[in-house]
Image (tube, rainbow, N blue to C red):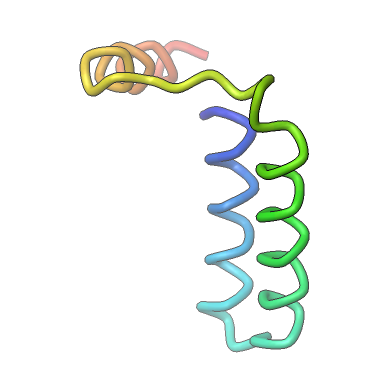
Length: 59
């Protein structure tokens, strides 16, 4: 799981549990991190995400 993916997953989990205020706070923070570090975030193609998903089972 990528760092951004993990952070998004946690944010969505918190929202799903009903803590909307905390989820909104985390969402705003995550969006600012993505914006601030955009040049350092790698994009993945569909093929790369397929490989990552397969490899993540092994970890």
